[in-house]
Length: 320
Length: 303
Image (cartoon, rainbow over all chains, first blue to last red; front, side, top):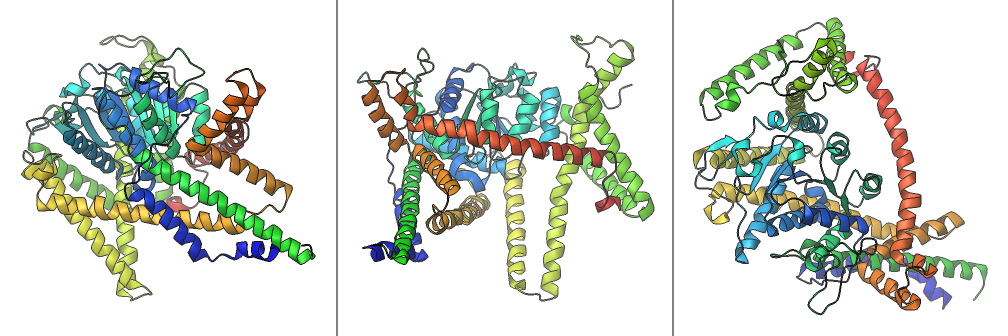
């Protein structure tokens, strides 16, 4: 018996890897299951900000993520953009961190537009519904300039209008009535780097800011959230699924059967509806299942290794 | 006259004017001449130039933060006195100075490419170990640049009216760029990062052992955090506790809910420890910034 258990710590690495690959691949072949979820309070606050910001004001998105964190950040970005499109909010996006960042954001928006087209929903048009401002190198200086005057910081940027003619971005319907950074409905930072710290330092007091960050960055962002500098925050893959879960169920909103799926116990009076149209469960739902499988395997592996170690000690001590 | 203050320029007022390309070329040539001149500066004169420029750049931002800012100055109203005039000058100069900083930062990309080309061409010409990978790297880089530029030129200039986000309007060049960027680069990047999962899994099995009290505490915390990340487990666990307490929020058992336990660990243990580390790093950064600003740091281009 002890010998058998002691052998549990001798499993070859290749077999472990095989189990991991096969288990996680199951989620890649279309196995998408909306598991139950209890969203974090910080995620609920972010969703509340997204759904209650002034729909007549454009939303600014500082999109600083790239491929390396797409497992989390693309889900965040897509959830955010889907919500904005579903609620007819105009938005502006740009990056202050990485030259690749604008392109991955463009690709993500294109995917959502194609998805909306298939669903028979209105496609979001560049210039009329959203603006792509590209890259602003050097986060410190760029965000300082935004804080000082977006009229001058963005004044030199041009975009193609609906006829294909290049025009200054402030001529776009998206930026009508915007003269300073405070004029945005909300400011979101999708980031995997310290560009969000800089955004909070430079703009935190001027705008309603929400953060969508990776799991590694989460603990570092919580003090900003608790101090009120971030009005909402989603963290990592769990945060992506939190967002999608609330897009589907809302907060303190009864479904057709009269059940309230997502309850905000600290703000029971707050009623935030689900998004009215489009996809809700996406990358978060798929990856959340993979996360469950990976964490279960991890816990099993740790348990197996420790049981083997204890059994070996027993054997070496002569105890049976 | 405020030379640094932002004014709407000919450039922003006439974005469609083809004359801007002439300006671009002119500025590029002037920049090259300046670079050439600076590269010919004797070594003994380089340090004062670098230290002087660094000090002036730092001084601007220090003054910007410390100098009183004119309050409630209406449009077209002139500032009064030295303090208010300087404050306004600093405020209106931010876009100009930021623009310079952005341009200088952009040069890093060129510097990186130059460095990459130098290292790998040297490796290829000297047939050093694994030189074939250098060839592959340079070919891939050239391909990406060529296709990327062709894609950009088509979208922005040549047939800009025809190409939209709809993939049916794309030309072969647009498709090839998409395959290279989204199809290959992104997936190879993701594949590289996914290797971490194998390392973590293997390490969890082989190294995460309860050998001491500290290790036991660490494992208990890790277990709670891992379980709390699994929404299905958390829902089931918390549901059980709700059944036991009759959903009474005042019951002490509520503290044993998974998200409460994980939240306590995160807020009371993890975040304070991280903040302490970051505070230390912040002090170090401040000290290093002061040394750089005041020209006390040795080495690099200042030597």
